[in-house]
Amino acid sequence: METNILLENGTNELEVLEFTLEGNHYGINVAKIREILSYQPVTPVPNAHPNVEGIFMPRDTMITVINLKKCLGLKDENPGKGLFIITNFNKLNIAFHVDEVIGIHRVSWADIIKPDGTVNVRDRGVSTGVIKFDNLLVVILDFEKIITDISPETGLKVSDVEDLGERDRNTSPILVAEDSPLLSKLITDCLAKAGYTNLLVNMNGQEAWDMLCGFEKEGNVADKVHCVITDIEMPLMDGHRLTKLIKSNPNMKDIPVVIFSSLVNEEMRRKGEALGADAQLTKPEIGKLVAAIDKLIG
Image (cartoon, rainbow, N blue to C red; front, side, top):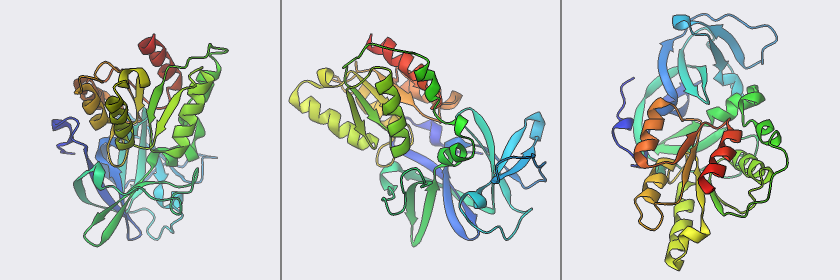
């Protein structure tokens, strides 16, 4: 799939693939996609989750196929047809069965509308944002949440933190930028168990940047924030843009920035390194996140 998203760093843009399910329009970040294949028969797996269609092996790689319509509570009027969107995130290769691919849109994170509580009920909602194209609304789906609902062990490995045992309390202020309420709570709970109790939580990169700028105006940003942990995918401002702004600011450039995202693959790692990120970890690795903070804060 030809895209331009990796040509520039920190522009606060992304490319969204628009696709349909029973006439409804949805989107996925192109950075998650490996390829798109025509539908092919799959092998059912006994006792698998009801939303798992089965498995298949293109080019000797076994891939699980998820019936996205079932995940969203939609009727499947055309089984055995459509396309497979092959994705890679959180170190998993997953195929999502969809009806039709419409095309790719390059948009700014600032143009993505965050769903309110009536749409995204905590722990249940699977939408991370909505984009308006003319009179059409395209819903960006939370594919990490969809996978975690099917297989909880693919989520944050909270046991890794529990295995650390008793630790000393550390009051170093850590700023967290994470748009998912569920993941934000899990991350902060895990950090608190690891002894980090002074957490400044923000719902997106813009909120985090505004907080940092406020501390900078007070003249003590380096004292108020000792480390920044940021997701990549966030409305208004993404984590790469936030990293670029921090590392380009003479008063903030020495603050360690840890990118903690499901999108940390080889290409995204190079992008993060170019922006000056001090560490980059995939979201299941909460134990490694604690270790990175320990090392960076000292």
